[in-house]
Length: 115
Image (cartoon, rainbow, N blue to C red; front, side, top):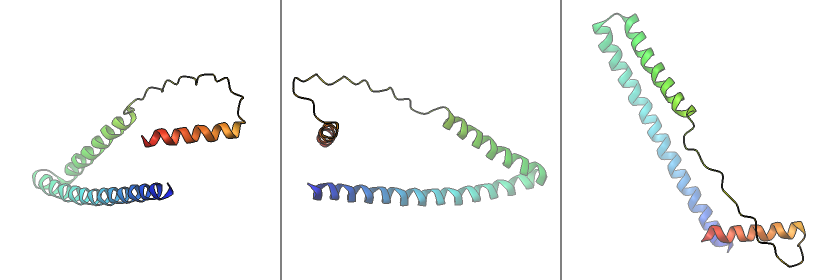
């Protein structure tokens, strides 16, 4: 029982580690790409306009993109409905002490999560 749980925890940790490593690599690659794109945009804009105008254009582009990203984050994303729970049926048995009742509820929840 505990071996199965331990193997699931290990596989989940390994999967999370791989996901984090790939995400970090992708983020670093994105930053390097943005740096080169910004540099090439700067060189093009300076050849066409003055350096002050080029800085305003690039700064405005990054500021506008950041404002749009923050607005998307603030919009809330997915909204979840509160789960409707039905009260458990009243049993005719003698009531259990609260600690034993909590233990049984935990066992049932664990059994449900496996299936």
